[in-house]
Image (cartoon, rainbow, N blue to C red; front, side, top):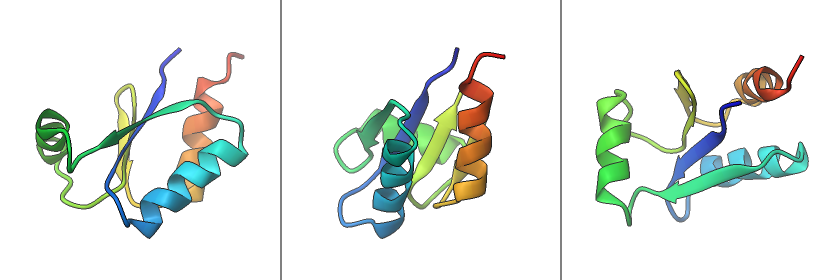
Length: 80
């Protein structure tokens, strides 16, 4: 089972909303501050994103706060 990583930065309302949504759904996730982790920032840029948050689970990734995409990602983590 893949896990979810949220690449975020401080003072980012969309980042906070994304993390709050995952927490409210009871989903465990890792948060990486791209202002403190150069390698993480480079990884996000390599995926083609220049704004936070970037949410990654396995080969699936997207940028911004998107409850629908988050729910699809969460559902893909639940064993059948």
